[in-house]
Image (cartoon, rainbow, N blue to C red; front, top):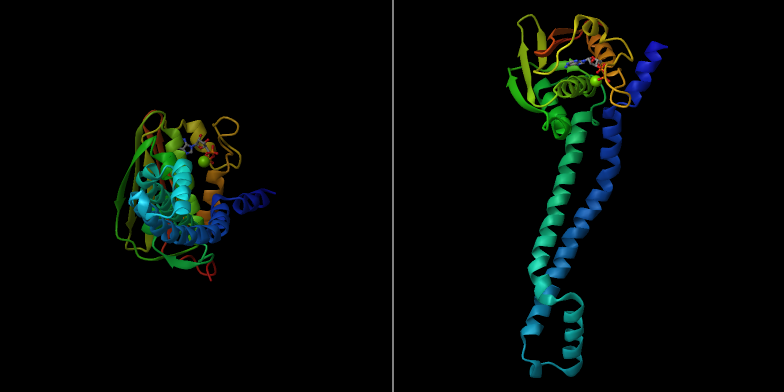
Length: 270
Ligand code: ADP
Ligand code: MG
């Protein structure tokens, strides 16, 4: 039953959701983007023409054109639009670029194009995870990065990103007012990569620390925590032949250390 729960948690994991959302949003973004480009192409010359007409001596214009020009000017105030239009277009294009960036971040994070075992750069995995959670994290913590040189790691990158996300979000949750989250990576000569996520948050008592990997164990209020993040992370790391270590001190903070072998144990990864 436990592994089934973990499985359904995986199915509902942010990674899956992110991949789905990124996929669904991609098409509409594509046509909004190209339509916006076309609209800019239509509107700008038309508007230039209108302003030119408005500047022309009234006598030079046929009666019906003059009347129509007055009507249009009354309806949309050409002088105002002339100032406003570049700003409107710029803001729309800017907003769209931000949406595109978010979708790209989600794609990188969920590695939709690489659902299976692959040789991955875990520093890049940490960065794409940070891109996704940064909005939530930046109000709580300054994030410091000390990345070492890492060899490519044979892993299911989307799942390791999920682990990194759980650890980073937990770290942010543990910080009450303002603190620091430090991400460190290093490699050993024996073929291991170590990723640490350290925070200056609340820390844990011995009693809490003993139970954190239990499914549904949470100290967070209902609705805030499911208690599944670390148990899922544990099973993902285990599947990679790795391990998770925790050092914590109440009032000082916590350091999670994830060890992953560069090549998983025989028979584990295709
Ligand atoms: P959730 O975040 O939904 O509570 P997790 O499995 O991610 O579930 O974490 C379980 C519990 O472990 C948390 O409720 C919290 O008490 C403790 N915990 C995890 N990470 C930290 C941390 N960085 N600092 C302090 N406590 C933590
Ligand atoms: Mg959590």
